[in-house]
Length: 248
Image (cartoon, rainbow, N blue to C red; front, side, top):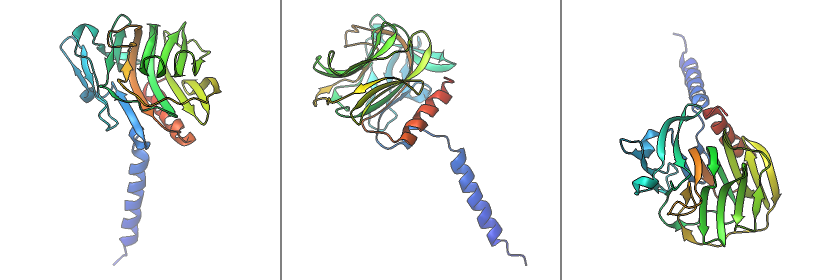
């Protein structure tokens, strides 16, 4: 009788390797995921018949769900917004969606990846304690303004006009460097010697506060955030994931 045990073992090993190779990368494959909002996952979106969104669930496992109970301030779910992928559309008037009050996640290091199409307005994301301690991403005359500390300290302005077209914007503070990336390419950087004091406030998208002030006219498809330094491989995997998914 022929010995087929070796052939079976080899086939099983090859199948396992193939399964691993065929498994798509996900942000949750990277340790330390703090926030993950994904409009392409319909199970995370609670909306009404008019497609107004009252809740956007966090896929990180940390329960940092976004919600907006006031109908007039709810963003709209758009099925085909960014290169045929879904997004939440904020009107630039007063639409906003936020977590409950949570401890600030980002005190010394952060990596935030946001897939968005900005048409105008100002504040795209923010978590702040008054104006003294904050992380924020603004549209500033068509370029990214990244604030890591407050409105005057730790402010970095991008160089590339990013409005009116979809982009992956990455905000990074680590190893004493503050940096902005557009579609995986460094757009601006500066030395950073600041940290953010502990506080408890909502993490917010689309505007500067619950009243919808300083709002942004923006489509947001995905937000992925870490409060630590990422390895080059981890950063490249996350960047390539977003660029490929949204055909950027």
